[in-house]
Image 1 (cartoon, helix red, strand yellow):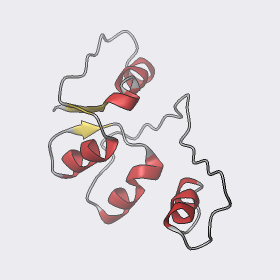
Image 2 (image 1 turned 135 degrees about the vertical axis):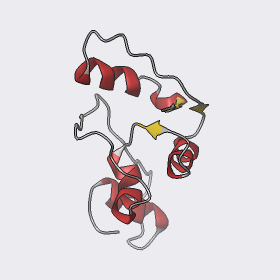
Image 3 (image 1 turned 120 degrees about the horizontal axis):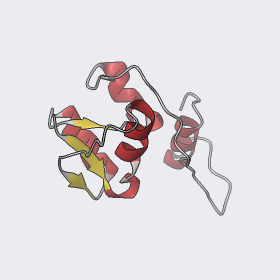
Length: 106
């Protein structure tokens, strides 16, 4: 099965493999995308397996468009963040994204 990779999070497969199958020498093979959204769409289209960042794939998992093929979840050594120089308007798209990233209803 192709392992889809995003350039911004290129180490995801290595981190996952080190935790799930230490010493196995796993090397992911598959297309590399410059945008995570493109990699997600290709996973939805059945092009391969992608390390899912939960906040960014939750809707696809809930709808059944994507499935988590492995029962193991990892906390990665970085976080998704949103920063704004000004207060977000409560109903703005940025506020909805902030709520989603915080695990709150948008």
